[in-house]
Each structure stands twice: as C-alpha cells, then as structure tokens.
Image (tube, protein in one colour):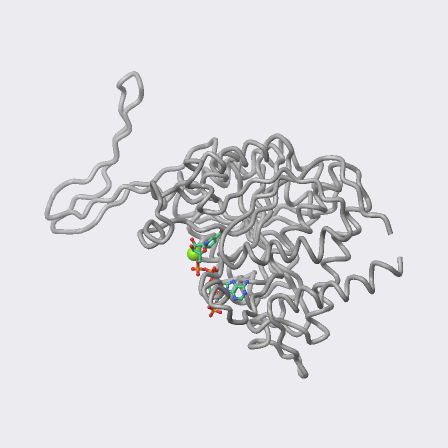
Length: 405
Ligand code: NAP
Ligand code: MG
C-alpha cells in the first residue's frame, strides 16, 4: 500500500526524557510506515534549547503561526536541579509558557475514554473537556501582609493622572490584602478560543464565574462572553445545534457531578487549575489526557497533558524495562494529523488518525496495556506490556483495521 501524502508540513516539537524515547518509537512504528510524514522539525530537548539560548522555542512558535498546526513532546521546565544536571547557561523558561504567550492561546484538556478504565463518577459517559483561561487573576497577584491597624485602598491612576479610589478595609489589627487583575483583551481571546473550540468539536459550552459576589470583576468575564456570543457566535451555535450556557461556579460544579459529560467547561484561571486536576483524576489517569492549545486566530498545538516521566527515564538509562503509557502522546499526533487533514482537505490523513485512535483504544480494551492502567482497570485477564511492546500491540491492532479497508 502506498504511504499517505501530505501537502503542508506539521510543526514537530521534540522534547525530553522518557517522552522523547516514546516519540521516536511512535514515529517509527505507528506513523512512518503509513504516512509520507512532512514535518518541520524543532528540537526542544533541553540540551538544544540551551545551545540556541532558547531561540529554538520561539522559532517553533513562529512556525506554528505560519503553518497553523503543531505537535509537541513533553519538555523539561528547568529548575535548580536541572541547571546542574544539564549544565545550563540560564534557567530557561517553560517552553509551554513561551509558546502559550506567543500564540495567546487557551488550553483544552479532555480525557481519552476506554472501557475498563471507568471514571469515579458513574454517570460520566462522555468526556468533559476543560478549558482553562491561562492569564492573570491570582497567578499575577500583588500581596501585602498587613502588620497592624491602618487603611487599605485600591487606587487606579490613569495616564492623565486622574484617579479612581476605593477603600478595601479599615484594619484594626494585622491581616492580609491582595491585588489581582485581568484585561479585556485576554478575556476576549479566551472567550473566542472557547466558542471556536465548541463549534469545532460540536459540543455545548459551559462557562461559570461568581458574578453575584464579584459584581465588577467576575461580572466583566460574564459580560464579555455574552457580548461576543451574541455578536459573533449565536447563529453559528444554532446552526451547529449546540448551546452556550452560563451559570454560577457553584451551580456548575453541582451540575457537572450529575451530568453525562460531552461538553466543554470553560473556567477562570484558578477554577481551571483546581477543576482540571479533579476532572482528570476522576477520569483515571494523566496519561490518558489530551491537551491542545488553541489560539484565537485558529492555530493549534497538540500535546500530552503529562510531563517527561523522569523516573521512568532514569530506569530506561540504567537498562531496566519501563512500562510508560504512550496513549496521550499518540493522541497528540493523531489530533495534529487530523487537524492538518481538515485544513488541507486530506481525507486519508483524517481517516488514518481516526483509525489509529480506535486501534489504541481497542488494544487497551482487549486487555493489553501499560502498568499504570493495569493498576486501575476493571478488566480481567490483563497483559501488562512494556513501553515498546504496547506500541507494537497498537500497531498490530491498527494493521487489522487499516488493511481491510
Ligand atoms: P510527569 O512526567 O507527568 O510524571 C509524574 C508521574 O506520573 C510519573 O513519575 C509517573 O508515576 C506518572 N506518569 C506520568 N505520565 C505517565 C505515563 N505516560 N505513563 C506512566 N506513568 C506516567 O511529571 P514530573 O515527574 O513531575 O515532571 C517531569 C518533568 O516533566 C519535569 O521536568 C517537568 O518540568 C516536566 N513537565 C512537562 C510538561 C509539559 O511539557 N507539558 C508538563 C508537566 C511536567 P510513577 O513514577 O509512579 O510511575
Ligand atoms: Mg494544578
């Protein structure tokens, strides 16, 4: 059979440690035999980031803007220990942060559902996709530990010198204060990314804040979403048969627990931080979570939600066997290839992505899986495979689906 041709390259961002090992195995076993893979390759491995003074990360983000679709391997975010381990010139910033800032994106995370790995919440039949606003609020705060009695004020000084002043509190003893902000521009990008992603995936969009208590701050989020929805998206949503639903955050939490799933839940920064960990743990495993960064201009970057699995990599280096789950990384590739296929009108590439995902799920449902899943599955007769043999098992399932077309 001839390999599938591609017209436009994908931006390929290679990464670090165990996921870098999986990356190559996935390409060799699951992609290159079937696709005449066209990628523009950027090595975001820490050594190469260090050699290029992190220029490679910026270049890969620029290439993503140019081509529209990227696939990224997990990368190390350097800390003090990594400075010595890799003999770094500088403690380079998180590549994900750099790419997110360059693309002005929102991150969407969705669990990969397989039979035998049941969510803790019994009524969740379909995935719940979490969209987290990744700018501002408590993550860019200013805090003061108030030493004793005194008056705390909130002051805004405009460029022309005029001021807006509000009393926060008249302290009669020690306490704490905090200043946070957000911008209409960032909230607008967040809203558009959510509306676009809902249309793209044909799922309802939920959004919630605490606007009854925060009558200006949270209310501003609610108003911007509503305004953009009415002006730009209402007709499109109706045509697609999907709904935009706003409620209070506490009501949303209660409804999510009773829901069947199959929708996108947009969250402010802190809510998204907390709720995405809750949702992903309830669905079973971080290694079964996809993650895609979507920019308001319609640029997509696909990756796995987990890190570089350092502990497994050190075992691998010692020549010991590993059983690292490659599912989220496989789905990063299929997500990116499907999007490339959609944008280029390449049906074969889209079909390939669908089948590879199906083969991955079927392999696990047949009882062949990595150790992390074996520990939580309800399936009986499980075969625990090592990193490489799991990928080979997926290939076998894939061949049985692909060559009967
Ligand atoms: P991690 O790589 O997500 O791994 C944490 C633990 O979760 C692992 O030790 C492993 O548990 C389990 N795990 C995660 N992914 C797995 C998989 N695919 N298969 C099986 N088990 C899996 O997080 P970390 O160890 O905290 O971080 C390691 C490096 O990744 C850090 O340098 C960090 O900066 C980076 N990181 C990158 C990204 C990204 O690029 N998007 C995200 C997060 C972290 P057991 O050891 O118990 O088996
Ligand atoms: Mg968190």
